[in-house]
Image (tube, rainbow, N blue to C red; front, side, top):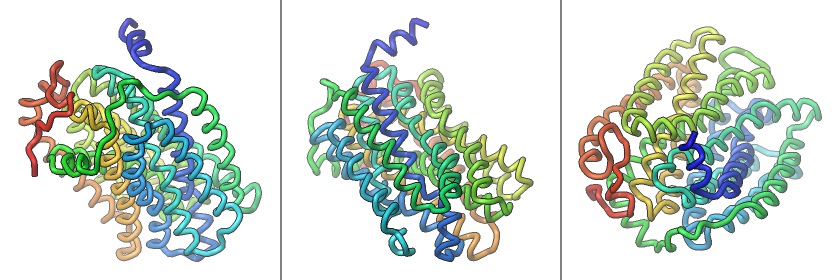
Length: 417
C-alpha cells in the first residue's frame, strides 16, 4: 500500500493520465484499418497480399514518423509535440471520410495514419520524465496501456460501418475522440522540469553506435511489433481461415487484443520486481511455443485461446522492455524511445506481410506462424548471450536495475558496434 502511495505521489498524475489518453485514442486511429480491411478489401477486390499491405502501411508510417516526433519531443517538449500530432492525425481521417475511392488512395491514407502511431515518441517521454527510476516500469506500463485503444477499433469499427452501410463514416466519427482528447490533454498535461536538454542529430548517431540500442530495437520489434501486427491482421486471419463475417471476425480479434492491452502495465510492474531479463526470456520462450501451436491451425476456440495468451505475453513484453530502456538511456529517453519505437513499428509492418504473403504464395498460414515462432526463439538466444555483460555493468542479477546503474545517467556503458 505504501509503495502504491509513493508511486502516485512521486510524479504528475495529470500528465500520466494525459499520456495514456493520448496514446489510447491515437492507437485506436492507428489500427483502424485492421478491422475495416475485410470490408474495404471487398470494395477494391484485394488479394491476400494486398490486404496485408493495407493493414501494414499504417505501422510503417508510424515507424518513420516516430523518429520525427522523437526529435520534436527533445526540441519543443512532449506536450506541444503531442498537440501537433493530434491535429495532423485529422488529415487522413478527413481524407478517408470524404474523398477515398481507390486502392491507391487507401494506401496513402494508411501511411498517413502512421501519424497517430507516432504518438509513442511523445506520450512515453511525457510520462517517463515525471517518475524516478524505481517506478519507470509501472509509469511506462500505465502510459503504454493506451494500446487498449485497439479494442475500440476492433469492437466498433465494423459495427458502425455495417450500421451506416458505409465504411467512410467510421473515419469521420473517429475525429470526435481525437478532438476531445486534444482538449483534455491541453488542460492536464505538463512538461516535466526534469526533462533532458534537446539533442542534436549527432546524438542520434552516437546512440546508434551502441549495441544496446540495437538490441532493444530487436526486442521491442518482436513484442510491440507482434502486438500491433496481430491487432491489425487477426480480423483478416479469422475471416479468411474460419470464414467469419467482418463483425464476428473483429469480435474474436477483440478477445485476443484484450490480453495484450491490459497486461502491459503488469509486465512493467513484474519486471520492476523480478527483473527484466527473467521476464523477457520467459515471455519470448512462451511466445515461441504458442506460435508453433497456432501454426497447426486448430479449431477456432483453441486458436483464440492460444492467441489471447500470446497477445498477453506480447503486452507484458512491451512493459518489460521499457522497464529496461529508461534505465540504460535515462538522459536520451526521448531520442531512444523514438528509435526503439520505430523498430517496434517495423516489426508490426513485417508481421502482416509475413502472414499475408505466406498465405498468398503457399495457400496456408502455417509457414507464417512458424517463422514468427523462430523469431521469438532468436530473441531468447540474444538475451542469453548479452545478459552476462548487462549484469556486470548496469543491472543486477536477473535484470533488476542497480541503485547506481551507470546507464541511468546516459553514460555509454555498452560496447559500440
